[in-house]
Length: 319
Image (tube, rainbow, N blue to C red; front, side, top):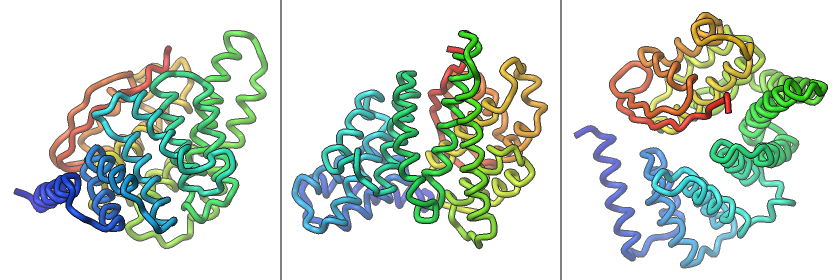
């Protein structure tokens, strides 16, 4: 039995004891919930946090963080119906925060992520626009505090909207002006991220490394993107879902940047694709499945990441 397996089983045992009524301080519940996230145990984390909040948390700051982690646990939990989970997650935030007025970047980032997932699930453009609203408000508060997280996601959603609006313009004969404006704004945000963080000494900060990698990738500086992606491989103990999130967004960007008429074979010859192949290592064949559409994909063994299984419900871009 590996150390990780032992730790996971120990955490699950502690979580079950708490759920059965063992008295535990809210701060300890939060700590255990965060560790459970690393093992994709979002369901137990959600139930523990719900229980702690129901029992009452006096410290306002601790309560706020617990609510945020509850929203994350809810929308990430794979055992819940996707649409229901996303609706529950946004309700968690709305019941605690005034989403129309809050300036908290973590809360706004969560709301942006939930609405982005709602768009992926239901395909309604209004959800993507709502996602951008939250990410943009968080980005406007400054990128240093959240290390560019909401900024890079604002840029990504801007590109998604530009893609949809260009398709609409193609079919209606309308102007591309809105799509062009969105793409220009996305690139401006990415360049701001690069200028802010490129000279920062980064050690063991996976998300900041990936934010910089995506910023370079989005501006089509694939050489620098590859350099930063390679640095992510030096970081251990990153949860499987975190790697999946990174890979998913980069594959989307590669497709957004490509000519709409490009074939899959032609796509595999592009510099963007080769950077992704290097990032994925011996699991690079998975990129083809991600690129094509909805797939179930099991990965295990060494190479890119060790011992993880993922199920990817992908977007069909031709719909």
